Image (cartoon, rainbow, N blue to C red; front, side, top):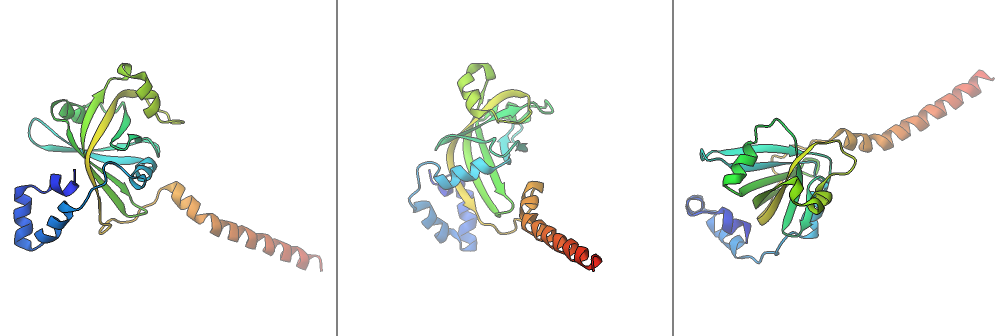
Length: 204
């Protein structure tokens, strides 16, 4: 399904009409849609080390949770399904409880350095660890210390990319270290040249 077709309810369309943006979004809704994730989305998801998930409680309030892990902990099962191993946390189980009553969730995946944001509507499924060992072996992160509690599978209903406006670039320690490597190499070479010159001067 086209993301706009799912996201734009009658109330939203009414506001779009009032502000003059409805005609633009009406064209977007009629555009052809790629059926499932493309390589672009698959690669983006595979690089992420966190995401945000909104679920909906019996109290009718949404609950937004941050989920994190090593880069690549979100696994693409196929072009319409992604999943994670759910690590042991604070044992509040708000998202888990919400999903047990309402499988509809919304995900936001961000790359701060790229100022890119992928938004996903999905149906979430809770899968017991003992229920599917093959799935667990597919989803479990490598070379990462964690205690698994369950698995979460997300059946993608629609997705779209947001504009980069107002996303402040942020970088991890590893990304900063990598960016500084050329400068550090340059400084190291300069220091070696200075030592050589000092040695030559002292020998005169």
